[in-house]
Length: 205
Image (tube, rainbow, N blue to C red; front, top):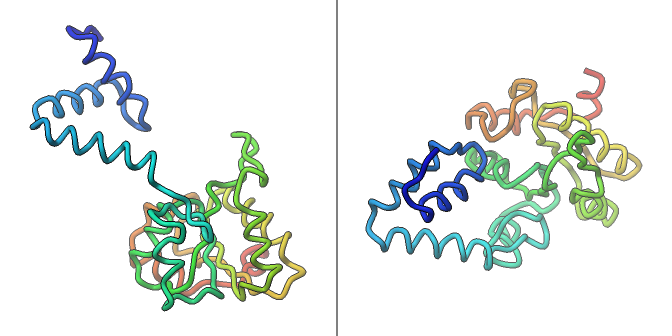
């Protein structure tokens, strides 16, 4: 792809580094920004800069937050004894959109995947196990995607806490095997949360 401007080429190259964005799409986006009022580009730049410098990780659930404790963890109306274990913020958003869950979350930051070099030590698993050991949690709901990596992560966590007095459940398989939570419709995902089943039962199935 030949560019008439080095500045344009640099901008396209940087935008094309984003997931799912090829050079042609990046070019279209950059040209769109060039046509917009300069204030729009300024607001976008400032928003991205603030995102990088000001965003925090909730010290309790590891969700992305503007404050030390996220809005969910600091909400006194939430039940802190029921914790839903998810992969990342996209899953939190998907479940919150169902309005069917009133507990807290624990964001692992990924799934165990030896192929990608991601082991238990790379995820927020130890802190989750600590919550169980400290008797902060009465029920863990495993809500990872129904993939091999998701199931492996669920089982690993289950083995770490099976000797403690905590109920473990998993979302019902209204979510198709292999599907990611963020792509599930709200009704199906909501029913999967409400109709969750004991984790031990899911292993036998």
